[in-house]
Length: 257
Length: 66
Image (cartoon, rainbow over all chains, first blue to last red; front, side, top):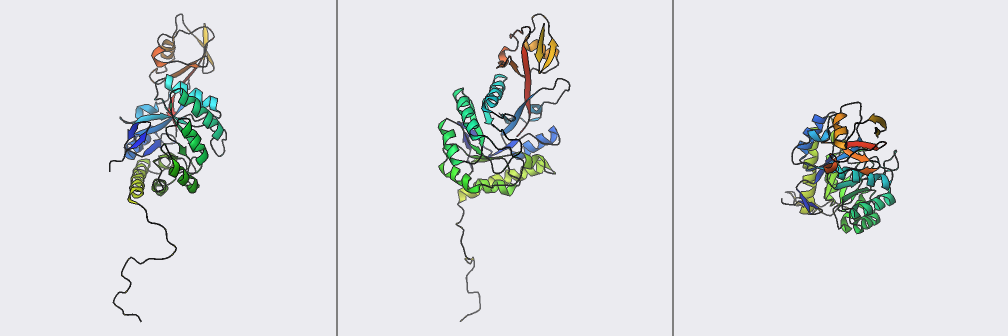
C-alpha cells in the first residue's frame, strides 16, 4: 500500500519512529533500528564528558535513517530553544522534537512553555514536532503557530501503560491539520496497533523496544503492528454492538419450533 | 590564555580556534556541537572562530535519547 506519512513536505514510508535511548548496547540499538524499518530516530543532545571517550551513537545508525534531535532535559522554553539552536548550528537537522518538561516524576510536558518555544522555533525556521499531553485545544494552538506535527503522549514516558487518554487522542485525530504522532507510554505492539487503528498518523516507541528481552525482535513486532493498525484504519473497522450477531446461518440442521 | 570548556579551565594556544581546540582535546569535531559564550557556533565556522581569553565554551553532541 502506497501510503506515505507526510511531515513538512517530507515523505516517510515508515509510520514507526524509534528512540535510541535505554538500549543495552549500541549494537542492540542498531539491530533494532534496522528491524523496525523506521526512517526517523530521535537523539538527545548532551554535554561531552571530557574525561571519557564515549562511543558516538550516530556511528551505529544504519544508512538512510534520519535524526530527529530532541530537547530532552529542558525544563523551560528558553532551555529548549537553546538546545535546538545548538543542534542546528552544529549540523544536525533542523527538525526538532520539542520537549519542555519541568516535572521529573511524571515527565509531563509544560503546555504553555511548549507553545512558547514552538512559536519561537517555527519563527526561526525549525520544523517543530512538539511532545504534548493529549490536549485538543493545545493541538490547535500548536498548529496555528506552524508546528509540523503534534505528538501526544499515550501515557507517561517509559510507563508502558498504553493509551490512557484514548478519547482525547480520538478528538485530536478527528480535527488534525498536521500529523498526530502518538509518542510515549506505548508498552506493547497491540497498543501501537490500537493507536494506528484510531487514526494516529504514526507512533514513536523507545522503551518498549529498547528494554525488551530481544529488542530487534520487538522492533519487528512493532513494525508489523503499526502496519496492521494502519491497514485496519483504511479497511474500516466495524461498529461495536451491544449484542451478538451470528456469523453463520442461524438454523443449522435441526428444525426448532 | 585560558578558556572554560564544559566548566573546566583549559589553557589555549595563540591563534586557537574552535576546531583546533576540539582537536587538541581529542574531541571529534565531526560530532561536536559548540556553544561559545552562550551563542551556538555554526559548524562551517569552527575553523575560523578564534577564541579569546576567558571564553566559555559548551561542547555537546548527539547522545542516545527518546
